[in-house]
Length: 84
Image (cartoon, rainbow, N blue to C red; front, side):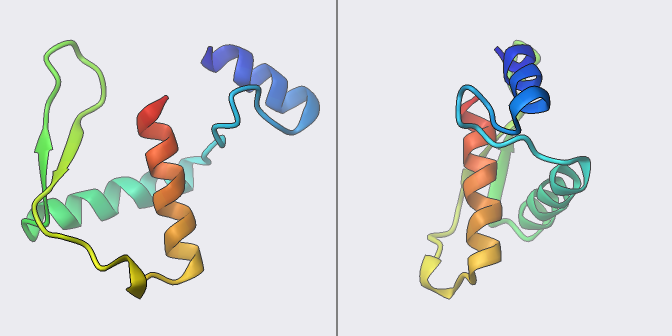
């Protein structure tokens, strides 16, 4: 499915699945944020046995009202990526 999404994105500028295509910079930013949160014990990293990407279990209840629009969009993209 990711190949079809990528091909559609390259041809038409949007994906079939409506999951956004993240740039390498966005992926790096998300990874750095997750590592920072894991080191401060806000989330726990859970490795999957089948080799898929690790999951992160929140350990602290988040106050989403404190987010600005840019932070909210990054989290929304991360959630979409995790669901893919």
